[in-house]
Image 1: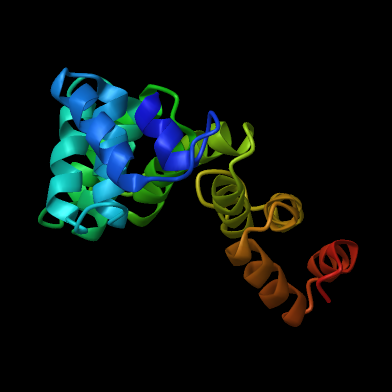
Image 2: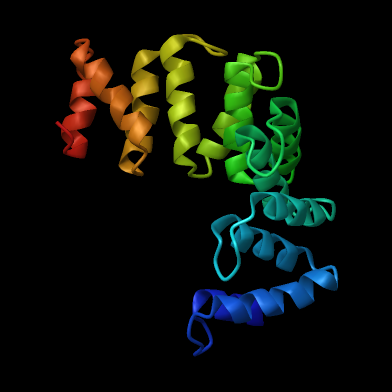
Length: 204
């Protein structure tokens, strides 16, 4: 907590990444998963230390091995992008699934995309919709975009472009740029509900 206070400028302390690193290291060495994760995040960003993606991934793994969902998800991102580890979509999928099963919303959204695009696993539109909908129902805007796309293309569910637009509008209202782009494309193609959604959002 003291490391976090220095990292975030909390508890009346000025931001001091060197102090944050020092305290996170002590807690991480004692086996605290949250400190291992936070120290990994600092190495990823290079705050108070030399940026080191491999060290970030190593620290995420220590926390992930203790079931820390945020670290499991971040390690999945490392494997997805090949940062600090060799790119491995199957490993990314496995980490996203594990974190999603622990309730991590962003992991649910990433897992849905893995199933939708066949990244690290076989294409399974029903599973893509299942996980995207779980995250979307809890407010994840990227997942809302995925739900909208699946409805629009009739993948995993019967095609329903109007329902797709409703989800895209919700995502766009939450600031999701891909949803805005999809709505503009639909409107340009002459789909009136998309044009109406853009007007409601002030995005004409």
